[in-house]
Every structure is written in C-alpha cells, then in structure tokens.
Amino acid sequence: MGDKVRVHVLLSGRVQGVAFRYYAEKWALSLGLTGWVKNLYDGRVEILAEGERENVEQFLERVKTGPPMAHVDGADVEWQGYTGEFSGFEIGAGW
Image (cartoon, rainbow, N blue to C red):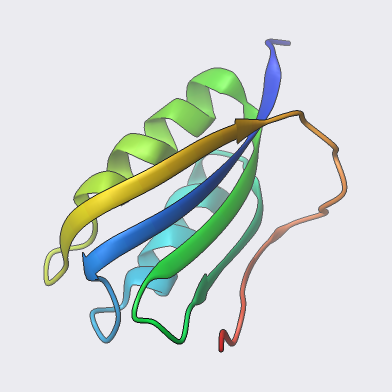
C-alpha cells in the first residue's frame, strides 16, 4: 500500500451546469478515492479527496481538464494530511 494523501481543490471557469460533479464522483470512485465534490455560490467547484497518492494525482489531472462541456480556467490545489474520515465519495448540494 502506498502513501495516502488528501487534497483540497477549488476549480474555476465553466465548471457548473456541465455535469462536473457527476464526472468528479465517477472518476473518484473509479480510483478508490473518498471525499466529496460540491458547487459553490461564486460559480466554482470545491473538491476534497483522499486516497493513495498516485490515484489522487490521477484524479487531480482529470478534474483540471474537466468533463467534455467544461472549461477549467484555474485550479487552486492544497495538499493536506490524510485523515481517513470518509467512507465514500459524495456529491454535495453546494451553496
């Protein structure tokens, strides 16, 4: 088993109304990650994800590109210590 990490991401651009949260959940689950994704009132998408470093890095690359209809202009990424507090990956309502 590899090094476990946690990442907090704020994505800006055309990231709402393009199924971004659905794709983020799908990608996270396929990589065995836990955490959540939600829309923010200011138009950004916020993600908190945990898992094996390699998988989190793959996930991060996917969300920086986004789903087909999205256009990610910016990604603020903050690496944090792994907590293991989540049991799955969920879509939050946001706002």
